[in-house]
Length: 349
Image (cartoon, rainbow, N blue to C red; front, side):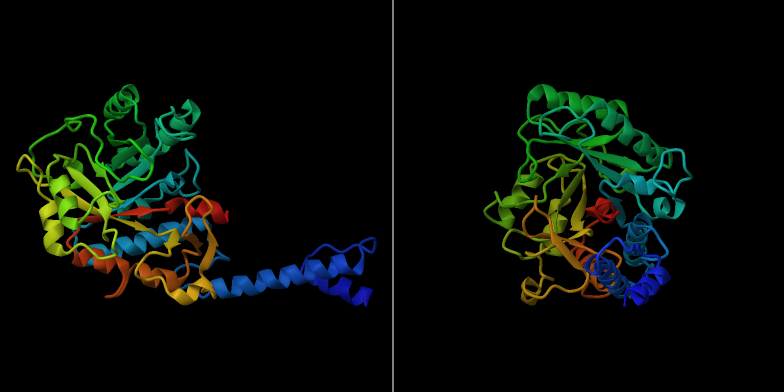
């Protein structure tokens, strides 16, 4: 039996030693077969095979797919991935060729914690991390992409410094006074680079408001009134209010009006690297029997689950059909989509 097991393990290039006991050798084979089984399930993806492409490329392909689908319906629709800046080059390294197909699919790059909030909110990001991120962001900027920075800081001095440093780099930015993004910051009282222009495209935006959790607002009407009283050029919000109902096209159209009479872009948040158990697509059966593409719960954000984002069943939820998340965003009249958990490839790598 030992000789037979040795032969099997050798075929699969798995470790075998006569010094090891039979239990250990069998464990190697068992784990390998489990791996093969899981890989076979993942290979159902029609987008890219996990055995032949990197996790970075699979995420690029997902973003490209969303972009092609939405822009076919609305050519002016903007697509903005947040974080995951390594996707901007072919192998994720600075100095490598640009990932041109990915860059051509997007209109801007969102990035959190460039100057504040990397280790702790209201604390300066280490300069080494700032410089690393800037190296990638400058590549995107040189390709005519708008750079959108969200710093997490609450003191007056840090808020002012965040806006100043981002303005010096010609990045547009938002200083969020808390991580949950539940309110409109009272400071500064005048929006940074406030203007009365009607913003029709990303390149014209000078600032933005990131407000994806409406739980502090008593109603949609309350939310709309509060946002309309501001002069932000762009709003990043959620398609759904806290009660789970989607904003209508008429309500989104109201939100496109700035207080000074100008028009703003309204962009919908959508997580593509995690599934959320409070979304319309979540099925109660998943609480006991998870689909093959659903993975571990994020310990930092209860109710958020990692996904095998290359799987066609997950992608079908996101785009490509009349009942998809992207189509709901388009139907509601949003000007674009803000894609979160783009850096999910790091989890699988």
